[in-house]
Image (cartoon, rainbow, N blue to C red; front, side):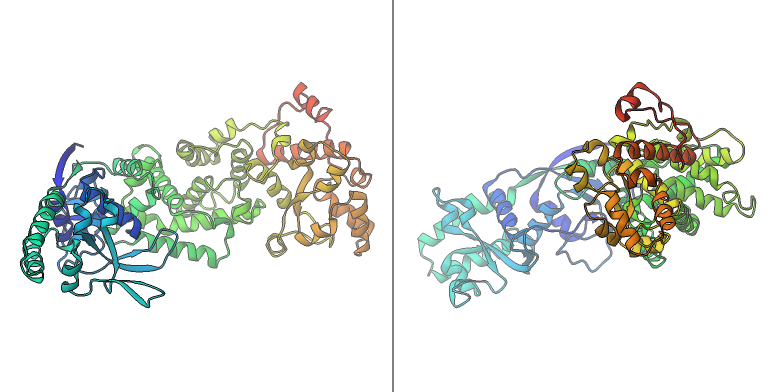
Length: 608
């Protein structure tokens, strides 16, 4: 990759734009500048101020093939292959092309806070441009597509430039003539004739031409040029660096542009996949992005290739950008099934919606694992289905070890290989080996922001708890229909009233999934009080005990409003359940730190 820097005349750059020699890669966003920003850019150009560099990528490279498009306002009859792709400078070049080179009104907006489209022509007030005391911005006139400025709700014409004679009379020069010498001459001759060839106006325009028009025509812009051997990952990084004020460029946008060069619409495909997930009511997949799908695809493709040629398994950004369309198509259907199977697996783990998903990132290896398994069933029938306990242990070790909160590409690669080795009597995955959970972590899990917090709630749902007020089983259908959320068992108002420590009553130990209607019935009352409401709603004593116990709560301690004993008992039950899910013993149950925080060791086998 080579980088060169040159100063280019603005007129040359705009000519490239108009001829299609400079185009935009498909991943570039649309032109969005408003009227105020346009006027300020014109101010900079007409004042000779620098407006920053542009960055161009050579357009005929083998390593980088993007579908491209013309700049807004450019009309080319032929399909032209560009010499350059503009990575940085789109907004400025689009603005200047429309202002200086187009005969139609510029389509823009009044300001950034409004979506209403307006159409504007831009003029220079000749006298104000030459007045050393005048602000240059005041010399720039933005006028409607009817070339009139109105006041009094459209009743009074303040300025009318709808005819060339009126342009002459008001000495308003159209900026869309600046780079056309013949049209400038025609306008000048017309203006001089309008004023009967008097010397005052002839000399006025001469000064305007020398001091204003010629500097615009000679204006130069620094251009950084990247050669055609620039790798896609470098293009992505460069684009992100130079577009810090805009929407970040994602790997999905780059791959979409790459596939589009081969006439494949990745965005349309991804939208169809999302609709399929929605139609099947796989709400746990709602927040999965196109980038997640591509990461899982790259993981799957590289894993399959590694089995043939011992190449690396990976899904880092640079590897996703190297994904071949042929590989994408070949593995497309299997990966869609992989995500759907992953959603079904999560449902069996008690995770029903995207809000309750501990890590969306962990779906990447999970979907790839299921996708590979679905393709291997003829060779090794029911490989995963006979080993779901191992898959579940791997999953929960990732959740309670909180191992997917940062950069995860290396872990993804280990996961897919390790899982199948483990299933085939190999060593356990690194995710399982490294997973570690400390008992005192229960106290610091205070909000849904924690993956482990969501994991505890999911495990409770996995064990089929009963609703406090109806005694009915809380399954996926009722969970979603009843607007279930995580609420306090000893209600917040009660805890605050009796001055219990917030670190305890607001922790995951004192929370459980509860229907919205049930939570309203509980209110802010002591447990002994809302238990009476449960019985008043028709539940027998046994049903009340069963409903409460199904949430890993000791009924006797709850009914006695004995928070301290209840809290220790439930912490023990939750730790026992985490051990069961991960298949790993939790160390430190009787450590000094645990005893200091909970008042006792958490070693009692409490399952009553």
